[in-house]
Length: 522
Image (tube, rainbow, N blue to C red; front, side, top):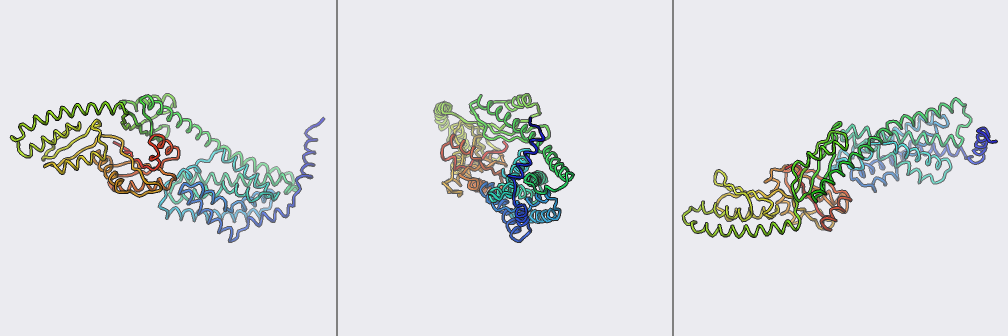
């Protein structure tokens, strides 16, 4: 019969015959790779600088470039080997090398962020501020693979790059958090960095022990070492597991909110274009923009009640409806407009019979009133002799046409004219391929949008840019923001690839090159 003792003896025999390596050569190589030399300092500064720039640009390719040249593997592997062999002198040297690398990395990251015009937290930065248990597992597997490659001298460069991927980006994010005075980003990214560092180092220790390094140590030392490794992993697993649970719960809540709002939008043949969920303790604040062909009163209150039942938390919903129209509605409105024009023409004929009995100012006001009626607007004579004309949606005039109407009336009228366009979705600005410059036509559109915002009393908008890449999209959005003028507070946003594809499916190929302006409050 076979028992645990037999299996244990077989395993020890197998290790002696199959896991023999040149221990001294491995230790010499590890010590050389983890030494504090000018090349190490230079590559640390270069890799952290590239990683910081990639994070600020939200560029995955640039971040990968920083990973390829990061030298952090050397001192970390030396730390693990020192723990396996109980060589505390080498452990001290590895910690010194690592501390110098950390200081240099943080310094260059802070300097780059401080002088950079791009300081907004990108998705690549935020992704490294909430470590989870999965990040710990990735670091453990990377550490085991790196230790195997180091000990056996097989594929060390490739696996070393894989280990570096888990260290330099979060370290650069720590520098970003320091420069932007964001303790939450510093804490989250710093915790991720220390988790990866310890997990990799201890994984190297485990692999080194498996290959027989320090096999002559006493059982007391081996037990102490195993206790240290297991205890560290256990301490790291608890907060990371809790973070993973919180992120999973948050994902479920966000998905429920999105599904509920999409269902409500489909009921009125509309769709949700923008959705943001903020958390204030247990209260969820939902901010959404709904494109709908008809207004639904009290829809926000109904959504709050429905979400509170499904989620079990207090919810506040701020819903901004943007009215749209389909082809059937447009045809019906055009027919109604033709009938009203006929009626207005009859009224104008009757008005001309007594025009001679009125003064020039009265005739101008009467003519203005007739024009207002023809375009289905509310006409109001202001104190001081001015005229205010509030257009209705049925007038069928967008922002550009409404501005043209005001200019035409001001040129012909003897009194000041103020036209207020109907509330509506603002026209998009479509750029040429690979261009972020406004031509004359687009500047005129931007002027009409700024004029409409002023007439509506809106001082804050979101400008969303589309493009083949994030840099072009942001440049387009910035060009439009500059054209709107200093009187409008602008929140610049860059459409994700999924949003760009959705816009192209709805509005055609030109939507990929467009910039959209949405009021933040009406």
